[in-house]
Image (spheres, one colour):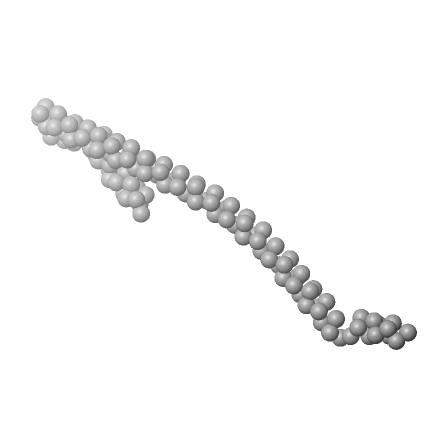
Length: 117
């Protein structure tokens, strides 16, 4: 009976309860780590997807700007050639089409500069 009493005393000592409480805290911490780990892993996947999309859009933007620059230069050259031809023909009044073309060229320049930022 003495041995049985010692066993019960050991089972119900406060120290054992503290140890169980500590284990609960450790399990809680592990659950918190698992939950945050899932969230961070999802964030990494999302971040990688966004980075790839940004890179793709950045390459597309660069390509479009190069195409725009070529078209812009050609259009400006076309305007100058038209003005030269009109001048050679002795036409002094600038046609509305040439004025509109020059205005459009200015708008394109503004839009292209905004895209380069």
